[in-house]
Image 1: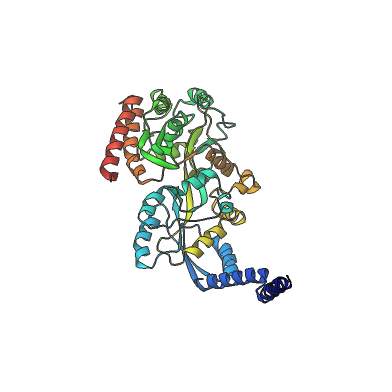
Image 2 (image 1 turned 90 degrees about the vertical axis):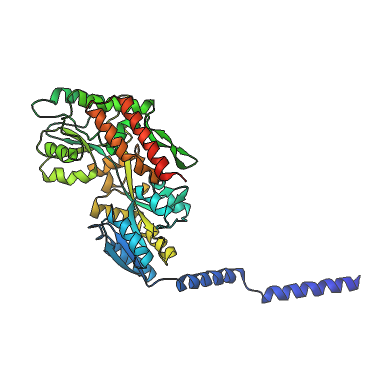
Length: 426
């Protein structure tokens, strides 16, 4: 018995000695963090190259300086026209090693660039994801993966001349009644570019049409909803405005936008459907504009306008992807997104800013934010490129009375399906 007790005492003494010699848990944890920080610092680049949109980089002077102060990383900021030149420049400069670490793109370009490896997928915490509206995060995703963080959104809204229309109507039935009375002697109550599918999707989608069905978080290019019952109802609604002479015959085709803007700027049009890019031009023409979300359709549903989201992306060719992602997480914080809005007037998709006075008290920004709740992101899969031209041609035959709604949409869908089969079949 004594021998057993003695052996137990020896074991306890040895364990005690080992515990005393072993590292403290807090010290061990601290040591791990220090080693992680050193490893992190070892991979830290001296510089990140940032491509921002043309004439939009001024805000980065202040925000970039704060990032450099916190990280020690210098920034080289270059302005590149975003809509078309940005992706083409990336394709050239990326493989050559002279491209950016971070760039900005419209979300409908994500699919083709992701497939080619030009932009890198992101792994971000839920806290970061929750910073933005769900629809804007959907727009920044492709094939179930996140490829960017949103910086702003835009969607068509209702713009009216306050001298001709005292307040924004709540429904399109009200707009129609107003237009029936107001449209005469070269004046028009309401105009929209509904032969252009970007704008025409609002009534077509609002009545139940869709481009591609969504399945398991991805868009299915084999399931088109552009000639279903809802889409046909939307096309009938569109055709009515043209057949009853409420829209002039000149508001068709490539020159339709400039013709519409010219009439509105001359004070001959009471209201239009247009995007936030048009606000300043109307103001410069001396028009006292009011702005609201689009009035509801006759079926009681909101117009489902297309939403375009601009986002921040990490180049697939960057050697500093980890720090590039940290940079876009840093600059999309609410306070910096607000600063960018104040300088560029591009409406951010940060949920924490929706009720911020900077946006809530800005009539145009508030209207865009409200309409964005009903908007759908333009499909960002490569097959979307096969939709625009057939829909434009069919809509033009519709609004000129050459084809009925069902016939025109059936023709468009047939051509889209053929284009997809020819250009995107594996």
